Length: 261
Length: 224
Image (cartoon, rainbow over all chains, first blue to last red; front, top):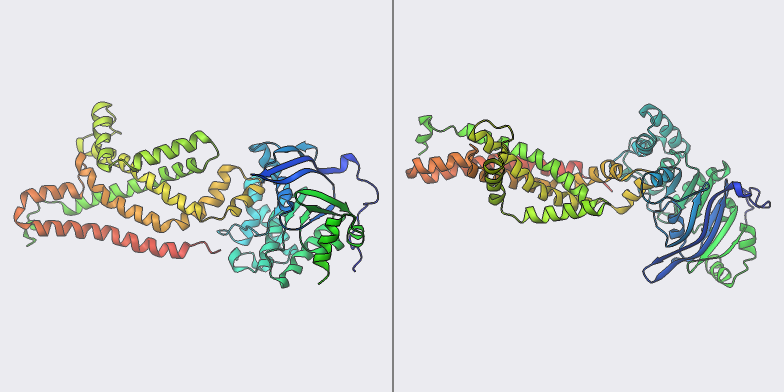
């Protein structure tokens, strides 16, 4: 078992003013399905929280409620002290501060890689074109796809597309990054190149919420592991604690299924 | 067989030129109006959606002849809306463009809506997640991809529009069908030639449209 490469002060409890994302009493239904049940979760500034759990446990939905791609039925979500506004200009502004990386990449198919990373800067931030391009090229360099800048997304491998998607989100200078199963749609040999970029982000102190099935990433990069099942947060702990000494039966059962075969 | 053309009595090229102009201006008008309609139909504002849906279903199910005649009788002769046209023919020409755009816009709207349906939901989600507002999501991400996916159905609409311009003859726009009516009356002994000329003229106008846009549809397809 690898040690925790990144550990950021999870011994001292995060102070209230350092809470970046706070969910309290969040409930959501999809028809008859109670997909999120009384979720209370606080994510501190600079913290890396990995959300794991079986399929259908509501972890993706949880991730998507944080920038209101999914609405909630009850409860409150605040980001940097401000409650999530209703649809409109305020919400757009808030979303521009919350980076999101999707399972299916969702790069704009009609724009080149470079244009993908520039679009938000120009249209949402009002950045000058030259400046946006410079920043885009720097970010593409950082995620290792600078050579592909003028290609279209369909010409790139999945791993490359996902790294561009990370660059696109970073271009907005987000306060927090949400990753919704970023490696689930990738061929096995491409998973690491994406995880490495995420590891690097974590080391640089980015606040991250990562929904994933990559237990290796959870062990090495997470400050905290949140385990969800049936729409509830069943257990939260540091990665060592969670993987070595899961407290709940549900977590023990889940871990026994994924770790031993 | 085609001797009657030598008399100089008929301005065939002029008439087809009017047809081409009618088609071009109406195409631009219906493209703009159709885009506005589809924006309403997918907008988050219920009133806009209701207007778009009602308009499209009302107008596309009304015969074009009724729309064009209404433009002439209601707008021009009752309400004195002439759109700045000076003589009878000019007013007819301008009102025909208005009527054709109002009518064809509904088909452009629906072609574009089918184009929008080819754009994966994730594209709009990614755009919203970046902080774009509805207009930006639509104009920067959805419509550019929808237009490219809708080129083939839009070509169909354009071909239908070109041929529908003949209805404008009913309100005296001096286009090809208007001349044809005149020639049928004067050249009753050469009916086959007359019909042949006009059928061929329209093929000359619409065949290249279909070929060029068919090529463009392949060329501009968004690769996923």
